[in-house]
Length: 244
Length: 298
Ligand SMILES: Nc1ncnc2c1ncn2[C@@H]1O[C@H](COP(=O)(O)OP(=O)(O)O)[C@@H](O)[C@H]1O
Ligand SMILES: [Mg+2]
Image (cartoon, rainbow over all chains, first blue to last red; front, side, top):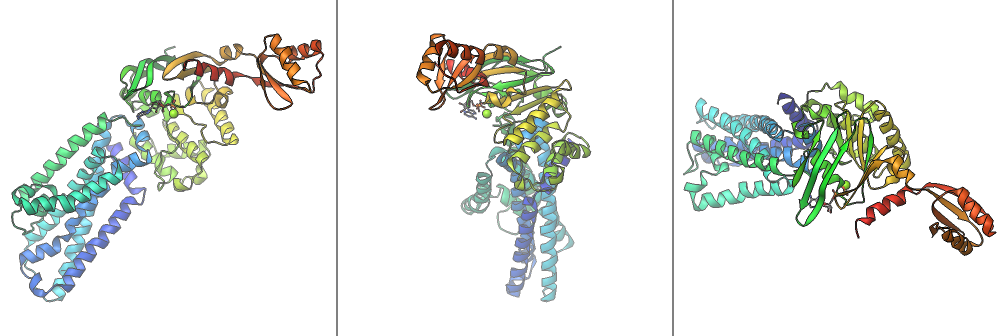
């Protein structure tokens, strides 16, 4: 299992795909930390709620971690490396579990980098603009832990999604459509349901003040449940499906 | 000695297509067996089932006495390549090998060794997207060799290779098998492997057509003889009268099947037909193969 995890980590490190995702995420996190921090009226940046929203942009790492997770499975199908992978390791459950671990590690790194950057950058900007920091140490801790635990779980969700939909393009479209369209629609129409969906569960984990969200701890449990559910479905499909 | 590979009634149905139909065979250790059949005969599907990538509709297969997926560290016993192109184009050849060798705990040095074995050491650090097809074929082979296996299973390894590549592959397989190891190599062209193998397993429409040694197969057929003569139609008649099948080769020559140059020469002499050229074209094994694989279609 450890050997397989090492191999999966090497798969991530030995192409530019994940590095590209990481750089894209950094650019995204910087842009959406700096612009609102510099351009918003001071009034929109005072108080705890506003500042959590501003500093919480690092949670975008979740989407990028999920993309990395999807690639971990789907790119093997796309380029056919799934064949040698399974020839060397016919225990597909072990391969899947190793990919989940590798996806979580990648997500963890993504989360630390993105949330670390947005906290750092916006902290500096707020101080420079003379806006007093309304966040307690606990708020900061929730931001950071919520973002990186969330991103790690999203990495695993990506692996599950990739196993369910091994077509890379389809899996990515599904993820983006879900994250940016479906969830927002459901949450807008039925917040009591929408708050149990994964992106909104992640929002609650960093302490966002959006009305109707779950408590942070419950949000974490809900996101974990999504991760486990998608993982179980993904694993059973991966085991059953013939490799051509 | 126990067979290395045993297939018991392997069957795979895709919708209405019976890709593999109740296929049973055994491979003895130390042999090179060609797995032959025209495109669509079910070779790849059979190999996928042998290797645990696809689930048989019915039947089962074992390698070294166990289903592939139940083998302990299968890569150290069986090396297999199903597609020549199974690489991430952005990954270096060496890293590709390391993703596999590390997954089963082999030392990184093995990747270097097999790279040398297939003469790719100079391109080891280059991304696979810059590799030629021949280099990719050899990288695939290298991955199969990582675990130093006793059985090599290759699906159409000569596909797309230039003649030099085919020769390289032939020499490689011979030296590999000369150490008592077993090779199972598929092809849709008998000629590609005829000089390499000692056993043939021919399938068509998923069913076993012939299982024999190459020698037996060869002894069942005579040579193909090319004859050039200014009186071609008379020549054909004379040969046909003697029961020798002929086909036109070009305007000046024809091919006599399943015979010897001595016999053709003698017949021409008796018939008084001038001969301008008499060449043994080698065995008409390929024709036997084509016949064997078309018989079933009827
Ligand atoms: N995944 C699949 N789905 C449907 N039909 C398939 C699939 N794989 C192979 N076939 C069909 O099964 C038959 C055998 O194919 P294959 O094993 O690839 O033959 P070969 O390798 O001898 O060329 C063909 O008719 C092919 O179209
Ligand atoms: Mg094939």
